[in-house]
Image (tube, rainbow, N blue to C red; front, top):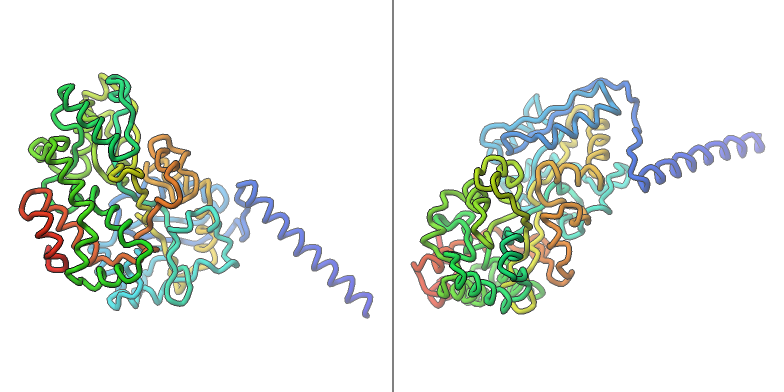
Length: 430
């Protein structure tokens, strides 16, 4: 009996070892290996705030190559954020849903958080190692309740061909930025730098100032506490960024009258840049995502295409910052039907190859460590680690970010001075 037990245990250990080796080989080789019965028939629903999600639907098709009888669908419920809790409690609750780090600690979203599965559980097999650590936000209990699908950052679209034509180098320091702006101005360019300036939401002013504020608060817990607490003295964290922004505007490097002709911070920013006469267009990575689709919509670009890239804005002598923040995150409803297959789809999706593929289709910033896979975003892959800032890791709250955004807009448009904005921190209202 003892010999038989030993033989049985040896066989079991052999199977377990082979399984582990096989799985490890598959993951290291980048090849997905199904872990469930491939004949399984079920439905999986993903809901979110996107009107359409072609990149995800392409992933559905790829997953169906392994599980042909699993029906996957994407839906956008009305008033997504406000009704998410009710949707998760309904009889047609989704399997996967969009989530955001600002939900942590928010009493209004406690019911939503209660539905989230801990995605850091090693039993799930998600390849979290491929994701930049600064994008993985844990709750107070150390659980990973949401995982990034796309990331966002701030910067400027650069017309590389214009720089080459005028014999200039893309700036990497503040002095270089001032020098190339002055050179473009002298060569007849009406606004060397442009961007959306008609409203505080998504305005170029915030894109310029916000990274500098993050840098001022990073590593200073007391200053961060005061800023999150809306203490007026904390307005000093905005001064450096506001003054640098006003130097660009005051020197004519950013012509707000010209910028004011742009009607929104997405499609019109892109189409204006594709005209080909703007050296640097200030925007977010979310805006950059729409460039590929709109190249064919631009008559000017179709006639005279040019190469472009998305670069950090060097607002200080040390260079620009990479503000690395999640754009879209997925959470799994732990009380959903077909949880095993839902987790199997997440295991398929959360991998270096699939996340990069989705980012490529959507032309958004990948959450993986492979920033160089898309030449448009490659410049951010060269930003030194010490200049990569994650608002979530630093501890920036939404009210703080709102104060910076509103102050930047009011200063940039001349409604208040830098000194007034600094002294009035905590009192700006949308």
